[in-house]
Length: 406
Image (cartoon, one colour):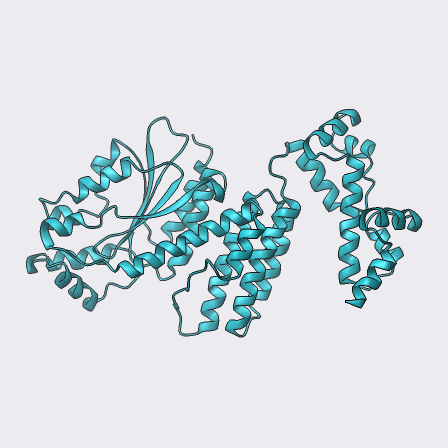
């Protein structure tokens, strides 16, 4: 049993609610499944496209999620699974992102020069293929699934490929023209989403600034007549992607829930496209800063728990002795391990976090200095003042006066 089986099975159940066909197949099982529901076998018996598709799947790279759109305008998703004794693959599809009405089916038949005798079979095929009205929702599920399986957004990439694309048209129907411009936009969009998740997960603020500034963004297709509702839906998806990216970056769920809930509320209050763009940029920056400030990736479980405890309970007794008791380890071992992993003594780290909180309160509230000191876990005002000046180069009062002068 692989470590990701639970999340894989859950994702497949969610996709099933979209009438989405998914497979988990070993290399040997690939030969016994018609991934296109037998379409090519029925109307193009001499086509090599099925063999080409199987060859592609067998040779798919690890840590890559592939998205493919074939000449029938159907989409497929393929991913080689890790941690298996023999090669195994997750395959989703086919699925449609546009309704296959009578006009569409006729256009496809004419475009691919499919003989009339196969019209009924083609119509039946499209009736069996699920139409995904909100394709971004499904793509989000698939991307999050890949991130869970590979241990984070930075550990896999997305590629747009031609698993079923051209071979069948060369053999039977002539050269069907693929909308290359549309394909390039889709590829660019997937790349941008992947780069964004990787930047957030690694706390790469410089990259996020480029993305937030619009240098690497792609315009999104309008799906609803109500443009504001359309924008809100895209922002909800973005909020989900950013939250999961920050989770992979090692941020505690408490901070994630607080920030994602805040943005869930703010998304519903936007009334213009200008607000949409502003909120999108803010979300990307804030999630990245959250990772920079609260990522515990790379620390041992013990130190992760200690740091989380410090950040969540600043007003408690955070002495070395008390924390050692809290986590049932010796003070000397905790002191040595903490210094080794963080490069800081426990006392200095606690003081730094308390001063960071004090700066936040000085910037965002009108609380008296005494109240701020207490809220940061320092009862002695004189000691708090000395500690603040040692870290910030000025007293709390001087710092507040500087803020008000700006």
